[in-house]
Amino acid sequence: SSKVSQVTFDTELNKKVDSDVLQNVGTSNLLHNSEWEENVYYWEMGSGWSRDTGNKYLGSNSMKQIQSGNTQNRWHALNSEKIYCSESEDFVGSVFAFTDNPSSFEGINAAMELDFYNSSDQRIALPAISFIPDANQWKKYTVTGKAPAGTAYIRLRIHVTKNGRLWV
Image 1 (cartoon, helix red, strand yellow):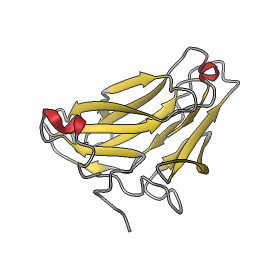
Image 2 (cartoon, helix red, strand yellow):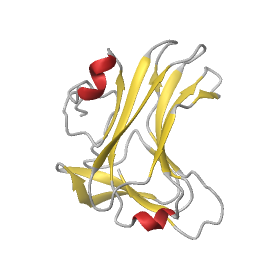
Image 3 (cartoon, one colour):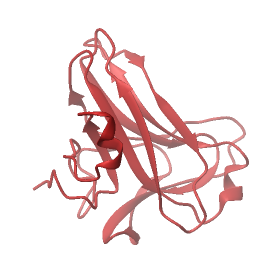
Image 4 (cartoon, helix red, strand yellow):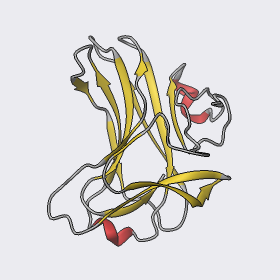
């Protein structure tokens, strides 16, 4: 069963209530199974992603992506479930992340996106942040966005852009 108000989630997607929500860690999480306790249900994993029970954030399992040897950007993503929503709704996506080797990113960042889709499953907007995580230290990264006209649903998307070692 999912827990929707626990503050120890590795990954969150919240409806934004007001400008102070970024400081409010206790807001309800719209994503299921974001602690990946026993499986990865509700999540789609691209190439290089796996569940990691050894590297935990506040007791919660993590997901890791290891990409190496790529000569072009690949964007193999970890995608959340679809969260149905409407135009003009505000969202906050956040993730705690780290790496064991910042140089593995070769200067090209990881990213977190709020992907908004229309009813034809076409991505129509993607507010995003890019980052190279800190070495061996969990840090919170946050992205915000407003559902544009025509939005049917949103997904949280996290990926290494080219090469890198990322835990979320």
